[in-house]
Amino acid sequence: MSVKHLACLGGEPAFADPLPVGQLYFPDWERYEVAMRGIFERQYYTNHGPLARQLEARLEVFLGVKHVVCVTNATIGLMMAAEALELSGKVLTPAMTFLATPLSVARCGLEPVFCDVDPVTHHMTPATLEAALEPGVSAVLGVHLWGSAADTIEVQKWAEKNALKCYWDSAQSMGCETAKGLIGGFGELEVFSLHATKIISAGEGGCVATNDPDIAARLRNIRSSYGAGPAVSVVKTSNGRMSEFQAAIALLSLDDFEMNKANNIALREVYMSELCDIEGITLEPLHGVIASNAQSIVVRVGEDFGVSRNLLKDALSAENVLARRYFWPGVHKVEQFMRQPQWNLPQTDQLNEDVLALPIGSRVKGEDVGTIAKLIREIQRNGAQIG
Ligand code: T4K
Image (cartoon, rainbow, N blue to C red; front, side, top):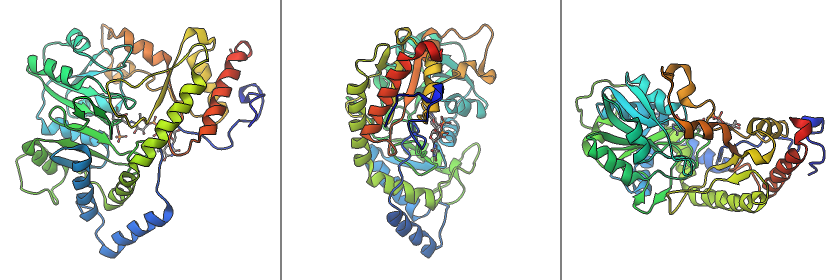
């Protein structure tokens, strides 16, 4: 594949079809068809059916927790979590996250308070939490990004010292492990996404993991009045149910987790060797994990690259390489969450300007990574014309 003539300078795109950043793995049609046939034969389509229950049992083993409650998506799971934990007032959470994190808090009538992150790991620390703590905070909502992890134990210790509840937005962290245990069993509960862009996918889906039977019972009663198990008193119920169709896809995706993880790791290695000599491009290492799902490739675009991060993104996009600025604008810059005086989050601001997620997952091949690296070099070489 030739990258002689960049598409942003009038050439043909290097890729005929878009290369997205998400995992976007779906099993072979034949396996999917068998699973769907079973649902149609049983004529049981949703409301905590046999496949949703099977998925919960398998995820309990996979995540090493006592209870998994499958839900429609992680955003709803996070909202149900705040209700199940009976939070009030303010929730302290990093601004370096996807919009769903603070939205889930605000949707429950709570106020998100943003903390900064460590510039190297991109994650919150006791020091960044301490700097942001203010009266009225009742809980910490931790976030793990990119297949890395925050220091769960230190964050929890800090939360306990300040008499705060601690729960985790682990939307991106399915199948990750820290030296202190699998992601899933930390804090009061952890919420995972099973969106199509994630390593285990239900197309659209999520789950909440907890070791606390009372929290699990509240979550099941908040999720639905159907198949909830013993009724317990909850403030509100909702509809966060996972359909049998979603559960069927997630079960097949779970079967193939190791294969998809190995594919991600192999692609990551190609990226490492292809990008290592490009001045101004740094592939962010994985932090805080002894095993990662490796589901994201995140680079920092430094000034010495010579082309701005935004121009690089646009130039790649013209080649059908759909790089993403996770997260831009920062959630603290979104109107709903702005404050006066403005949030003082210099490390998050910097990362929001520098970081770019590159394609990985089932649609990407090793040779594609070579082409992406060549494109990045070409874009750098032609910087004067592009900028
Ligand atoms: N907390 C955190 C920390 C999260 O990262 C997320 C979600 C959540 C909470 C909430 O989880 P969910 O409620 O979604 O379960 C994507 C994902 O939609 C979102 O799940 C994810 N995080 C976020 C980081 O990224 P977008 O809007 O940036 O991209 P999206 O979904 O439009 O697709 C990405 C690329 O893939 C595009 O180039 C289009 C392509 N694509 C996407 C889909 C879904 C396809 O080609 N086919 C597809 O079916 O949000």
